[in-house]
Amino acid sequence: MDHEPLRKEPATRRPAEPFELLTVGQVAQRLGISVRTLHHYDEIGLLTPSERSPAGYRLYTESDLGRLANIVVYRRLEFGLEQIRALLQAEPGDVEAHLRRQREAVSTRLDEMHALVGAIDSALESVMNDRPMTTAEMKELFGDEFSESYQAEAEQRWGETDAWKQGQARTSTYTKADWEAIKAEQDAVNAAFIAAMESGAAADSEVAMDAAEAHRRHIEDRYYDLGHDFHRNLAAMYVADPRFTVHYDAQREGLAQYVHDAINANADRHTS
Image (tube, rainbow, N blue to C red; front, side, top):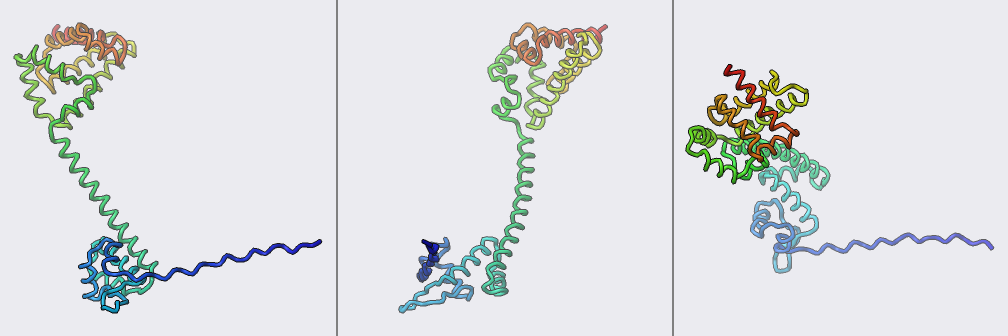
């Protein structure tokens, strides 16, 4: 027996519920603007509500809210009220045209804001680089090399020496940019020692002694006057004090001794 295919009845669309007219207070709350502003828009003819209650109170329709939404967007873009009036009158009822103009205005403003953020970041970086570094920033930059307890110990041991006083006078003026440059120079000196050592060059080779001289000049330029005899004393500390030995050997095994020997070889080269 043949069966006719079941026919699916088209879904019936529910009629849209009628828009409920809104009072001034309800509109103000919904769009986040003041009642006084709505009254002003009405007074200057920018947005006159389409309906009135029997008692004469303003009542806003759905169309009124659409116009008001455009006004709010344009005001947030800092357009003047007369500019907004002209925009709304140019193509009445053309929602797409309004949205395209609003998008263009927002995109322009975003470009301006991005440029402003870039300018502020540059100014902020300049200010940050021109001020002394905080303890936290020193720890972040130098890591385990910076220790408040070691600083206190060093002051206790050498605080009365000319080298300590000279170093304190110099470093007290250093900015963040200065310390970042110092860290880069220090890393370059260590890299030169490591490269010489890994190439198989002896500690008394030209390349190793040149790295030692760069090490001495770095300290002399940045901290205090450092002659070659004083440099020998630092080299002795690098192998005598486990903290220095660990610092160097963590970069490459045996580096502390290599630096010690290269410094002494360089001192011999300059004093012979």
